[in-house]
Structures are given as structure tokens and as C-alpha cells.
Figure 1: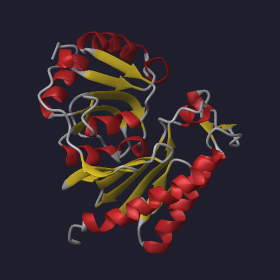
Figure 2: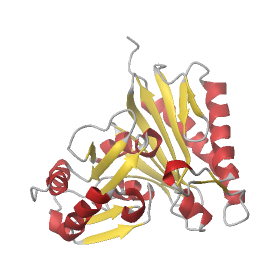
Figure 3: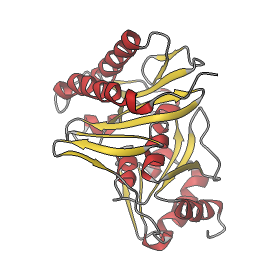
Length: 269
């Protein structure tokens, strides 16, 4: 078995991937960006030239630096998904926000080692932020410098701030009933932030996120990033998120996650 990777040594490369993707995306933000509708079962499913261009740039840089690594991406599919090292990419998470000119879209990049996500970043180049983390620690790299991140701890459920993207667009009928209990259980709920909300948990601003129907590229970057800041991620039953995504709960600490899972189960926490 290969020795565990030196994640700190990989951080500069992950930062470089974020910089390169941002250079591709930003010229297409708030302009005519080649919007298309992928359609399918999801109804309106937008993709832009920025989505495709950014993923292509990231894939090229990975292939040049680590030709034996696999890649899984939203726009161009799988290449050696069972390799020991696999990069999992969402070039623009929040394409709807992107086409609406709202700066809460992000670039999500995760690295799996032997099937488990061990390194992740959430980048927002318009604001100038890269959230980067692994089990050894999480930090924010911004125009103001670099600072370590720690989640907010010991928050009671009825004092928590929660985010989700769009219950009416992503939850099924049963989950919408659950959403009513979730909304009533917390102090404040905000919507429409996509994966930027994950970064806000790491930064200690938000306490909880729930989402449904995520793909692997939607969630894997958040797992090591939150772990490094003291947060936790599970599915709606409290079990680990699998390799193909699913319904997710993200929380600032284990106690808050367990309380939210109780609400999702309907037992009141």
C-alpha cells in the first residue's frame, strides 16, 4: 500500500488549479457566457462556456503534473476513476448563480486517496477567496492574506444558522415536509448559496447546511475541508457520504450534526 500523501506538499498545486480556473472563468462572468441547457430529468440544467473551459484547464494541468492520477468531473466525465489518486471537479458549482451574476458560485476541487477524499478546496475568484483544507487544518487564502479557519462550536440547534440551496428545486415531496421541520428547528435559514455555504461553516459564520441529491463533485471537496476546521459531514441518516454523493448534512460540530439528523428522522433530535 502506498504511503499516505503529503497533503501540505500538494497545497500549492491545488492553489494553482484554483488560480488557473479563475483566470478562465472571470472573463465570462456577467457577460454573454455561452449558456446552454443540458435538460434531462432535472429540467433546466444550465452549463456555460466557463464551466467547460475551467474544467478543461484543470484537467490539463493535472495530466501534466500527475499523469497517473484519475479525474472525475461534472462536464467531461470519468478518467481512471479507480486510480489510487483521483481528482473530483466541479468547475462552477452554482451555475444558476453564475448566470444570474451573483458571486456565490464556486470552483470545487477534491483529491481522493484510495477512495477517500483527503484534500479539498472551495474557490471564489471574483471575491478573491480560496478555502483549502485537509485533516491537518483548513485556511482561507484571500486578498487580505491567509488565516486559519475553525468552525463555531457548541451551538444549540435552536440558535443555529442553516443554509440550503433551493428546497423547491431539489427536494422531493417527502423532503419538503421534512424541510418544514428543519426550518422550524433553527434560528435562521438562508437559501441560494450553493457550496459557498460549506465554506461559511468552515469560517464559523454558518452552523449547518442540508442538501439533497448531490453528486460526488458537489460534496467531496467539503469533507476534508470541514474536517480540518473541526466540522463534520454525513448523509441524512448520519452515515458517511458515499462515493456517488447523496443527501448531505454539514455541521460545525458532531453534536449539532446529530441534532439535525434527529430532526431529519422526525424524532425531534
